[in-house]
Length: 386
Image 1 (cartoon, rainbow, N blue to C red):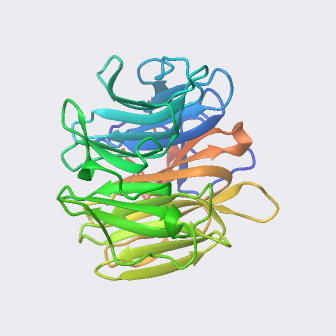
Image 2: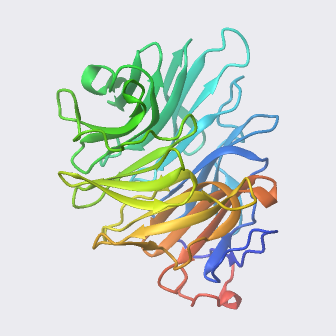
Image 3: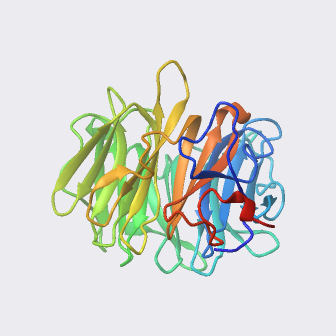
């Protein structure tokens, strides 16, 4: 990681990290307005990038990077540059060459009110459009990932296509994986991932099967169901999310919250489906990428009593397959929404919407080794310099 990070102990009004080793990156609530959605990615040196879109007028979408001193805008203040309502389904990814990609969907502010889905790549001075998919009908449930070789993939539900599709960028145009839809009808809570061999896996709730959670893999010719339907109850609709990850041993994991109680469940597939019920009342889930040590993390927003907002929990799945709270604390921080987590080596980064700080984006970090990035022990803030 780059030296020069200034990690200040968080002093967030009503939103204090539960462990002293959690440190604020930059100021809390660093986004210039309250945010609708956001996502985070790390470059090869562990520098965090955040892509967020705002609620209030002007409706903007912006990418920022932490410089070691402050959050700085990457490219123009608004990456959309067109007359659309808010950007949503925000995604950001960084390839092995530190090229930054973003993907998002929008709807026009005037007739014909077309829906559009964009994929853009940062050139060093601005954002180059490498995809713009436009439809006069609904375009929702979007997800975006990079393959192991850095190839962009995008998934979305398009009513004009008759279902959800996943596309792969071939350097010039976009090819539909399998030549058609994953499954007919509307698919909710759509997510996908590309494994180390380039195989594409997806999870979703199926409209024609009582919105039960299902998973498919593209076998080179068509989409095949992985076992049977995963859950016996439907996922929570319409606001449910799923996320999907594959570990270094090829085991598939899906995180979802299931009706009627919004309980968090982790489903794994190693030739048969297994369920890890975590309970809780959950409103958002996101996996980190898998580390070289075959570990990964799950961030979730979990409702707590007497509040419409949530606690943030971060769970770790270690190389032996065991789950635990990543820092020993069940809840990391209170009064948050829309949590995301990424990790590089021993450093965990958690992004969240900070309700007490104007519903803006905030990032905290936790060093599992007890040594910060410049070699100082955890808590030795006096040793830091710009």
